[in-house]
Structures are given as C-alpha cells and as structure tokens.
Length: 219
Image (cartoon, rainbow, N blue to C red; front, side):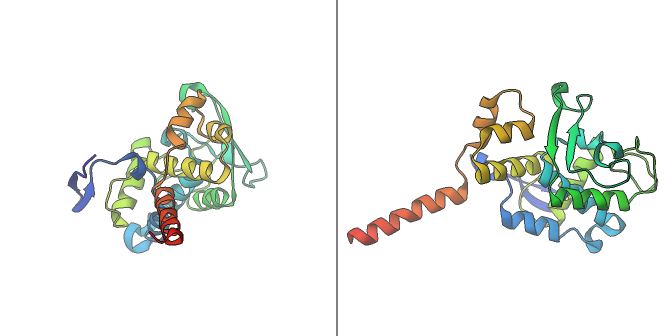
C-alpha cells in the first residue's frame, strides 16, 4: 500500500496505513506521552495525558471509556480498583469482561479523579472542566490532537492505542486467549488474525540473522 498524505490542522500526516503501521512503536509511545504538556494542551494536559495512558494500558474501546463511571474504577473507600469490570451495558455486543488494571492504568485513573470536581460515584470518569461527561467524539479528539501535536507523521486514534496495547500484550505473552479476553473478542480467530502478524521489528531481526549466517559461511 502506498503512502498517501493529507494535511490535518497544518500537519502533514499519512492518510493510509499498512497493517504493520497500525500500532505505535515504543519510541512513538514515548514521544506521544512526553509531548502532552502544559505548552501543548494548557490546563487540560494532565487529564489528556491520563486518557492516552489509560487507553494504552487497558485496550478499552473509546465508547467504553466514555461510559465509565467512578464506581467502575474506584472502591467505596475511594481507592483505585485493581480489576475493572467492563459492564455489559457499555461493552460492544453487551459482552462483559474483566480487565486487570496495571500500575500505569491505576496512575491514570488517579489523575483523572484528581483533575475533576468532586462527584458522586455514578458520575462519569472523564469529564470537562465543569464536570459534565466528555463525549466519545471529544475523547477521540484528545487522542488525534495529541498525535498531531506530538509531531507523529500519521493520524492516530483511540483504536491505534488499543491495537498498540493488544499487540504488545501478545508479543510479551504469546497467549492468544489472554489477548482475546482483554480485547473482548467473541471469536478467537479474529484475535489471531489481528495480533499474530509479524512486526516491523521482528522482520528486521529476522533479516539480520541472514547477515550472521553469511558471515559464518564467508559468502
């Protein structure tokens, strides 16, 4: 697939992606997160960075995040939960699932709670400055704008972060059932098709082994 470019918000970005380009590299993740500062996002920078970090460490769909309540992530005593129960009411195809919250996800939740007005446990997790919930579209905008401001040369969205999380999870565990469960896929074949592909780094390492063999053979 050839690289097509278009200008978005004054930024030249790739309009099309190959399968290998759907996920962010570790370097791109670092650039993305480190670029979300006061200078680029003003008073919303902590909230916006927490949203991106939360997506990168939970693989939740953006519609699920938009419908999360404080009671979904906080215990009665106000402490952050270690396990998120994605309710059937907000999950795709009403398929409830459990998503463990690692330290990075828990840190993001703490910041989202700190950066909002006090509210009841049944209020939204991610909100505007006035306490009203952020819409799915607004959350998508946070991710896309963050990518543009970070100087990444391609458009990214919430699904890019979901794909990055799940791809990394498969690479580390090689357990397709784990990835399927976290993703909330109804069929394992979908998970297999999406996440057992070769990565650009893996391809490079594989080709590098040819150099070693050639050197040994003297060819």
